[in-house]
Image (tube, rainbow over all chains, first blue to last red; front, side, top):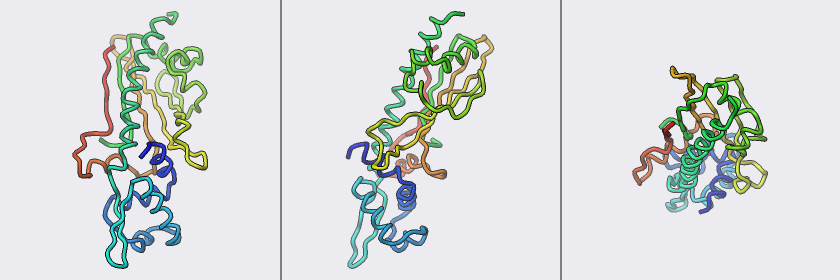
Length: 104
Length: 122
């Protein structure tokens, strides 16, 4: 899974809200729908996008499908944090040089 | 771990007004943080606090051109020795109530902390 996919998927606020609800517990589509003012097909579309990005997984039980969040799918967000954990100390070193070179 | 952010702190020998110049004069800012030169300023309190909207990387944009928003806040505090304590908070802006990274800690693999406070020597 490449980082951009997870970022794109979670850029949509409704999708993010669906993901957050599924972080709490596994739910069926109809349970999920109860919390949103959007149609079941729209929820299903968001679920498909989240599954495509590796953020949600599906479990089938007879005619029913249940969904839960997949925490490993968040690795790209962890990467975002890791990237800036390296970025800022480097930039602050440069800032120190800039400050030393400035006129008093 | 309280939010989706990276916090970096450092002590500088220069006074807050000088550090403020390095943060706000485009020519000086370009020398150490070119990414921020054309960024939107969201809040400014001279010699104390500056907040930029951080430009997302092009490859992170979705089909409608949106990107996950992040915001960088510089907090300047004068120190007893006449220098500046600089605190940089880079926060990934998600849904108002959301703390998506915190969830990772409840996953199968043990994860320490996604947020971090880094110290660098002056």
